[in-house]
Length: 416
Ligand SMILES: [Zn+2]
Figure 1 (cartoon, rainbow, N blue to C red):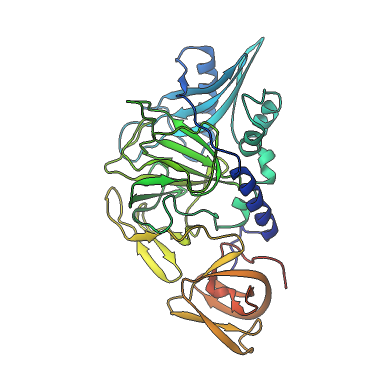
Figure 2: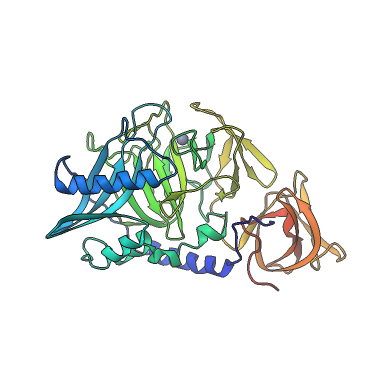
């Protein structure tokens, strides 16, 4: 597919990231006891709270303190070290969502110092912390040593993720792209409900319960997975009987049920998962990004918009309604794959070389997932995603115009 300005050509990096993700996924998952809330007024609370407020003010959400509270949950503590989740709760009303990060805190003679994830300072402090507080894997995922493996989110709009439920099920796209808070930008979130209500990890990674409601033996409903590829996903409103607390999860691991939990604020008028996409810990837009072999397109207003699988279009239900078109979960689109998009036709031709002057040697149906070995410039054609001269050589040796393939990147693989 043709260029997005922010995409650079680093497909091999993506392949490495896939390998890393597989290695991370091989580590077994672990669950943990409930996090321990820190009482307001204590010096640890005040230090972490100050870090939360500072980051919130830097964020795109420009959150005001009105109606919001800092919430600090310690998940691990040893000596002068503490690690856990740091959340700015939201008012309990529609279109308000909490903000949250993982924090690492260290106490010295001058008191506590607290750093939130996704910063160089986090890495620096983590390098001094005991492994029981921050594991080697967490240092990679939460700090920006991660920058080296965080390239996927900068280089491809294919997230490499499936939809967050079982492959083969169809769930309603109840809300199209909208802000984490509703109408704020970027439109980082979509709402999904249906099937067996079981929300599953859309990819392997490191999982945390960001907000622990801990009522009646159940955990609260905001689960974050750092996928290690650079992409991170948030899942809110879950009824979650598990708490991974930094444990590895494999793709498809159970995260919780779609629910109406608002432990950290906001509103959920019906059961769903509010599913958000981030680059590291920064929210990014779903618009033209893909998951589960669907490409999400923002509408003129939040919660509108639709999803595309090839030329098949599924409309969102809209704001605060448990309706919407059915999204079949095809599974993840790998970083060396694309989705044939015949631009509202039913098929495209396969050629013996990279141009329309070469013989037609077959065809491929709209919506088919194809695997690409390499690319070359040839006849310039225009599809749904704009003009391009790129042609993709498929693994069967035939060629198709990249104008009719969604890949999330300018090119896939090496130049042939
Ligand atoms: Zn939502």
